[in-house]
Image (cartoon, rainbow, N blue to C red; front, side, top):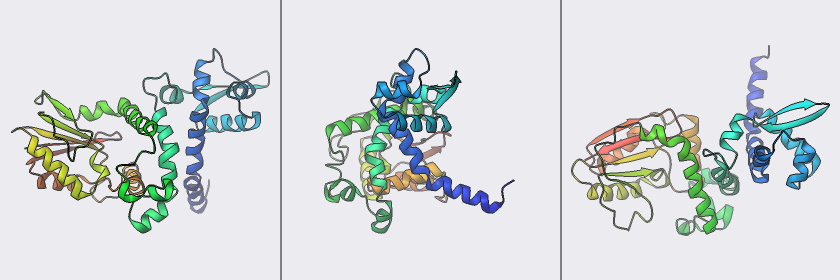
Length: 298
């Protein structure tokens, strides 16, 4: 049995190696490992995988065996040869043909978010996003040039759809939305463009991008567009009341620091923003998933 000191050091090592785990996942997706194994009629050896992907035999074998340790692949040995195939996890979430595939979001995380997080220390020092340092985008042009290309913008949008395919149902089931027959999912230039008529406006992963001032401005616009009895459904990852957890929401909040001008918030902070915009009735529901729901009506 290990000592408390050894357990603490093991935990520290796990944390410090976390970026390596992410890179293994990103590389395997980028190379097409999971798609190849899904399409193969039988499990494949490392040499066959390397030949079909055009990768080195040595590097491929190391990557495949690490994926086995991460439970992304499974392996069996026949006549002294290791044969690899997907696990249920990778078949469900990492194979392009799966309706729940998260590939677009993973590619966005690998190519954009990961690079921003390399500047987290500076983001904490400055208190602002790191697009200038990561990509050469001036902060005053951030929201006109947040995507380096149209392809990146589309990939991010597809990534949001990937996540929603898994996380959407518990969010939309958090409240009875039947009193709202006409629903508008708010997007586009919502600070300037006229809002269409609706009974309920949905702000899905929108408010966490912005400062309190900008959130207040947007919520006030929505309140002004709401009919009596109408409302807004805010979909975000809620922090605990003291802001110290859950860990995923805290990491998302740091991500807002390095990539945007916003943050994740507590239920009380969202209640305050919504009340200041004129919404009288505010209900917060935790779903147990990545995203929680806040329903506010006027």
